[in-house]
Amino acid sequence: MTVGNIIGNYINEYGFTAKALSEKSGISASSLSRIKNAKGTVSLSGEELSALANAVEVLTEGGETADGVISVVKACDNYSGEKSAIVLNNLNSLISFLNINVSELAKSLNFDPSYLSRIRSGERKPADAVDFALGVSRFAVKKCVEASSKAGLRELIGNTEGDLQSAVQVWLCEGEISPKDDINSFLTTLNTFNLDEYIESIHFNDIKVPTIPFNLPAKKSYIGLREMKKGELDFFRTAILSKASVDVFMHSEMPMADMAEDVDFGKKWMMSIALLIKKGVHLNIIHNLDRPWNEIMLGLEAWIPIYMTGLVSPYYIKNGAKGLFRHLNYVSATVALSGECIEGKHNIGRYYLTTNKDEVAYYKQRSKVLLEKASPLMKIYSSDEEDELNAFLASQSGYYEQLNASKAFKNIKIFICPDEWALVSKSDSPRIHFLIFHPKLVTGIENYSAPVEE
Image (cartoon, rainbow, N blue to C red):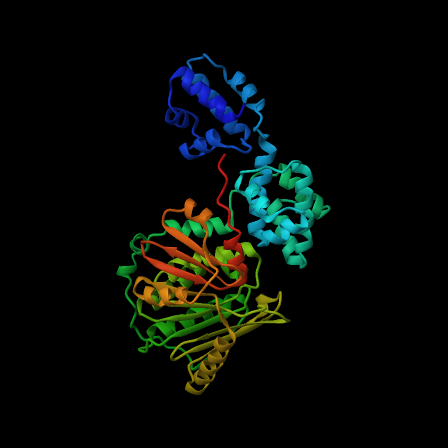
């Protein structure tokens, strides 16, 4: 007897509908349908099982008690209990957070990759959840070579001391289900984002590009964090007020965590970007992806509104920012801002801003060289550029549609060319396509598994 059989028997015997059971229990109709039709195991949290049992008691007008329903469900052949549900959800969060290659994980566990995929989707469960978690935790900790990765993993599992491998194993089996899957959050934002609504919410059409002259010395230095933030805003102000509308180049390896703590600065920074966009300036941005996976995804998610304008070309530099120094290079038609700091000592960094024509020309040449060394993070195609995208796809082979993601989202489709690229196509608001090339992002999207709802 399966859980689905039990639910079907209650419905048939007492004459209520699956819709009524869904509404009364708070379990979505799609989740209830999967439970009813599941050929493999069914995992329910304690809250879900109680909600289902209480709903049956109400709909049967006491003909079945909640405690009785719980006992019957737990005795079903395909009921796997709450532990498997925790392992499953936390496994998917771990894979996303560490950008784990699922084929490599399957090999380390002596699993067939397709079997591991079925475990991730909830179609199968590991024979021994604890032993399975042990194998996964060993692989995860082995993957975390750098101290920053280990620190990020400890933050994910909420454990700051003790043996990391044991802590990961315990978290997989017993930890609270992580509410945020970074790839899922990124894709969900793309799926639901409406550019028109966003433009209205920030009153973008009411924004006026300032024309009041801005007096700034031909050369100026900014030392220390407070001054450096002023230096960035001075650069943007000068670029915005320039009569020229040529491309703006931006590349920064500087640590952003301390600047991000200043909410007012963050608002002014993003407003400056909006004003450049309003002016029609195209941005060539080299993103710093030498960061933990979750920070990469959060950063890209924040840039979605800007990407949607079609006025951004994002790049990255392979191997990231390595070494003792971190640098910044911003260049517009009439102003350049450069900066540097020693790794870990952002508070004593230095920025240098110049409007001197010869120096600006030098920084433009340097930005050109940096772009030549950079690789495209993604290429963005608007609805007017679909012929170019279709020509690219016609030249490709071996790619496929990521059906798992397509079932999860109404407004986006995903196509994968393993180890090469991932295409995220948004159907409206606006219709736009993101052809992604960065290896970590491609692997993350390829490994994406829609959240399990049981």
